[in-house]
Image (cartoon, rainbow, N blue to C red; front, side, top):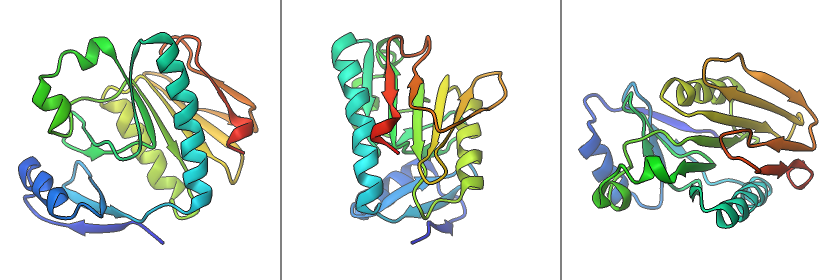
Length: 189
């Protein structure tokens, strides 16, 4: 099952929102070029791993209260106009509180999360995921992890730095972005 890309000229934010509302059963994203990406549901293997990552992140968020976590169904409108739904993400309270209640509740919030995770599934193109990760960083994400369970690698994306590649790590640190957060990758591999 591959992602389907539709080229819909002149699809603005409001039209994309309407497209999502009338197609609630589809998982849609919009590239900054205006292309609409239709993603298939994940297989149970990937969903289990996504759930494990989100669960570990939730425990840290609940313990620290430093921000808000989101699952893979949450869309964010990046500054370049793309609307993406990372597999897991986190926004600091400070950034979240700059949004109006409408932007928090009824729109694809117009901000880049502080932290994102993309988990490569068997149908994902590594090249496209890498491009997406770089786009996140270029639009204000401070820390991003591209986790590839098949190859047991993690690519760490940071603003203003080269991508760091780790082979078979057992843990990942949230660094100073998510202080004290450590993801146990034994539950992902």
